[in-house]
Image 1: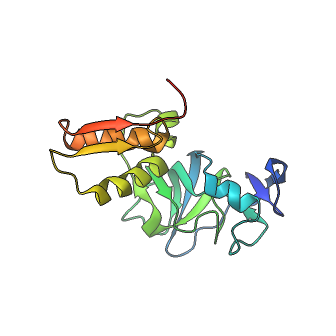
Image 2: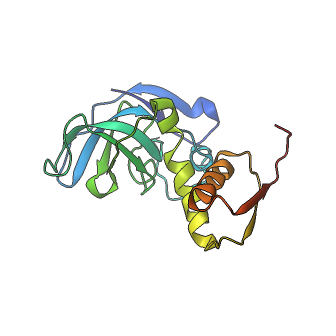
Length: 180
C-alpha cells in the first residue's frame, strides 16, 4: 500500500510517499480502507517533532473516513461497512490514516450511515467532536446568549449548528478575523 511516512521531524517535505505492507489484522483490531482524512494542527506539530511521545518513523493521521476491509469482530463490523475513527492515539502510538489502509482498535471504529458526500463527511468527525465537547460544557438554556470566537472556523460553524439544532431561539453572535 502507499502511505506518507515521516522518518524524522520536519516541514511538509518530511512526508515521504512510501510503499508499505498492508497492516495485518490482529485480535481486537479492524483494518479500514481509507476513503479520506483531514490534516489537523496536532499532526503538523507531531510532524515537526513537537509531540515527544511519538516515535519515528510514523504514518500520521488522527482521523479517518473509510470502509471496513477486514476485522477481528465480524459480529460487529461487516466488510464494506462505512466507518469513521478519530484520535485514540491513531497516528501517534500506532500508524494513522495517511495511508491506503489503517489498522484500528475495534472500540475506536464507529459505523455510520449518512447521505453526505465523502468530501463533506471527511470534514466532519474531528470538527464536530471538538464542537460537541464545547457544546456540552455550555449547559445552555433557552434564554442564553452565546458569543462564538472564530465563528467562521470549522469548529465555530459546527458549534453554531449544534446550538441552533438544540434550540433555535438561543441568540448567537460571533467574531472573525475577516469579513465573509
